[in-house]
Image (cartoon, rainbow, N blue to C red):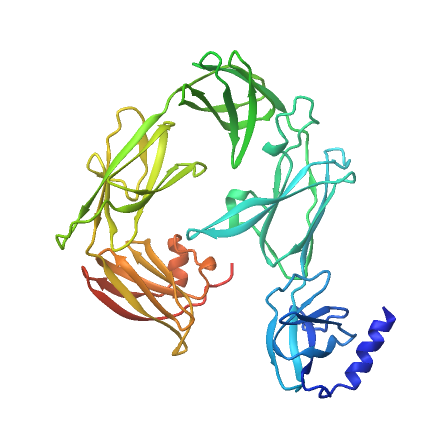
Length: 500
């Protein structure tokens, strides 16, 4: 290792044009993006086609690579304790001329760690600790517990390699640890700084390079058994039963006589869900339950045939054109958002069989020069509303039309073309969106006629367009009216989506 550092210092002092015109040289520095200080012992890689050269930074964050091929070079740096930067920088090396002062920066990792103890102050082993992170999906910000670890024999946990952002930490009872007949006592569940439902209102801001400690003191959790029977299970048929708790789902065992049992279930509100295939037809059941301080016995979960949902698709052509059976996509999602079925179809009808009773949403989109004009069931508009699925429900009618317009234009920042993401909104709902090309130009076809607001942002993943309060604070729009079969040209100023 000493030899490697000596080589770096000697080379740096003798840096100059390579004697071989076919080879090039490059130097630079690596800094901490949070503090601006040099990063010692960072590993720098310079890649030109198949030629790779490396260097290690000195105490001043300086580095040097000599005798590397000329051409388009990608330069990246990495070091333990810093987030990876696979993008790096690109530098053109040519004619043996040295490339000086190539600047690289590394963002220090954030860390969240802590200890979990019981009500007696003793460490608790193998308690699940979940990291709840913020993300935007379909214009909605939500907090989701999607990173997990477990405490060690000292009751300690650690999350490293975190980016700056808003987080909550939850420890204790979790559905993935429930259900074991001989399992260890479950512990109460706590979240810091507050409940997941509170989201951004209570989340802690974790800065780049920060060390954050969150300790938990948990109490033993009273758990009970949940027992019942699947009623209507065909002879010889296998049944499946599960219990849903929040975003978690725990599978249980069903005996031949239809009996089932769940162990170590804490108090709270749950859904029991079951299914069975009988002669190629699916039977389903769904029942809400409330679990208290004593065992829940004698439940009867009735298996029944699911409902068939059907609909027709027709085209309302304003041009009189005779269309072939249309190509369209339909997605059926239950009200809880945990069961979605999508289909890519072509024809004049669609259907789903054996759908469990409940409330659902239907989303329809068309391709080519067609757009969805209406989605109704029994004369009621369900394009933006949930509808009940059950026996005797009416057929769904989807109407497509071919008189859509076009919205085309350019996104600009500081009076210069700029790449971005464009959103068309009508009546507070997103209707169409598109990414621009590198020159800031975009085109959106098959837009239903009507009055719209058009927005442009730098980063789609930071835009809470489904949040009216966020839009009121952060969004500026250009108004546009789309006429049937007409094109509208617009120029939109690009907005910078604010951080969380």
